[in-house]
Image 1: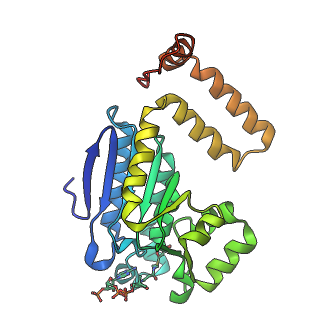
Image 2: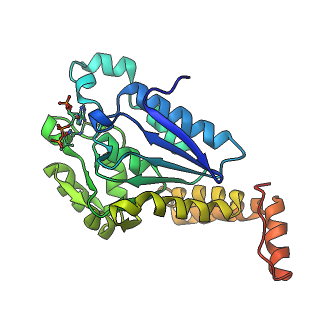
Length: 257
Ligand code: CAA
């Protein structure tokens, strides 16, 4: 597939996707979302990649779904096309994903960041769901992700008012992991990605599944899943290597096997 709206790079086992529609502040049209999803899946299936980083540019991570593309839709065209269904595939990515956010992360852009496991934000980044001002609402998971992150009352306030939240506010409510100076966002995301790339990949994968299930499952069922994943980890060579390295007082080398 030729990539029209993204750049793809690989650095030290980190797969990097840069959104590349700068004139429209990386507004997400359908082709762009397809490209992002397909590249995320390609990295997920690639054994030489351990972590995936998604970034925009200085001005915008992404300023939302492409309003121009959307404005002539009808309920029936939307029902038939089901443009948000493809986003569900982002929730199936097994490797750690990090969003490096500079500038605007609005509407679908915020939802894209929220589909990532971790978010590094520039001090002057702006997060928000302005859909209410367009007479609609978030459609790619925003109401769900934000409610899980900050609780019902705060989520309602933000999404009802459609105001942007600062990176500091987003951090305060647990919506982003770290806030750094704008020029350090990518460096910080890569630093974190490189650290994660050294961890045991199968552990990371089983931890990701267990933590996400904690949001949905009753604790008894979540503990059961965690326990099974713990037992499953003992099928990996990395478990043998990790414990042997501890005994031999040396750093482990994990292969993801
Ligand atoms: N869709 C299409 N084009 C967009 C866009 C979007 N979401 N956001 C910005 N653009 C375009 C602008 O139309 C403009 O294009 P032209 O130069 O051709 O006029 C260009 O990007 C630059 O934008 P501005 O001139 O508006 O830049 P600004 O600095 O004055 O304002 C902004 C920046 C506050 C982000 C403003 O662009 C804005 O409000 N954008 C729309 C944000 C929005 O409503 N997002 C939600 C979309 S709906 C959605 O995402 C649904 C969902 O849940 C999936």
